[in-house]
Length: 418
Image 1 (spheres, rainbow, N blue to C red):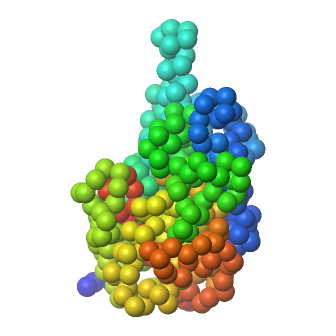
Image 2: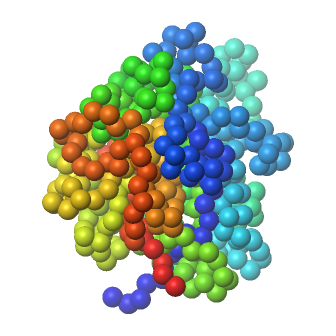
Image 3: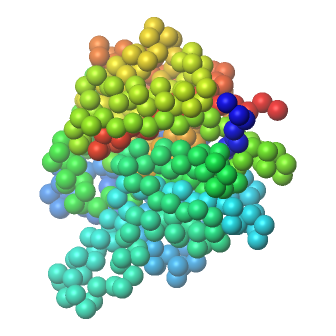
């Protein structure tokens, strides 16, 4: 195989239920802190909702990250994306110039786009009539608005694409950015994902689907418990995370700090059920294997798995089965953890957040825990790094995300030496 162009991560930015910046986020993840709390944006009891908790981004002021007038013309999912991207560019010390702007792409994901704007616009139509609906509603709610606004705000003019594959979305966005750099469509890329769909109708629908946990309303920090026997659903959350990817030689030439290489990407579809995984985990196995093949690695080359780990009765044992199918006996000797235990499940935003986690694990040699792991489930019998962070030398990581629609998406990150 001829030498391939390589893509490396040089910057991270994140706004999430734990913090508004990545260094603060990482320190809280390592400390095992939960960002799950009672919903503050509206009163779930007054609205008759069974679920009262979520992973909200707390005390977020968009005016701290962008022009206030611009912010008013963005849905919250876009505001979060701009904030995360501003931090990522600063972290990478990546200056957008006339020299690089046409070769910097934007590959940004969301599961549903501007759901908050959609709900508000329909409320206005019903309450005040169609003539009072804002003409900005469509450009605010469209799923590609985050990618478009990132291009506008930061002056990026390379390839721009919006990805929507449910909970696999931002893994897919990073995978597409990797392909763009390898194929020469771009020399650098802004890649990530955002979700801000914490509106009553979404919580009601997920709740009626029995996808969300409703038995920890009085103890929110205990609610997300991946792989634990007493899990009964995920905690819905919002966040945005942005990675700056650059072609390896270009990054080295400008003296960039390289956090990790995006070495492999794999994807598959279950074609089994719109909202449930195939019971034998074969779609997940195929996606993980494809990522390994893309990275030119064997299963024994992976040192840590960042699990999809949603805390649902079905996902966690299915993912466990898939890992054991692919890795065999080695699965029992490999650390696997789920940071969704601390930040909840943000659908289109989770993959980028977890890729950032993997890059930091490689940098720091510390694996964040799966908190709230208190009671073993015989169907989930791997090493989930329970409750306490662990020091470990990690060269290569695998990050899994699986979404409604049967989408499976996996990323492999590895250390860059020298």
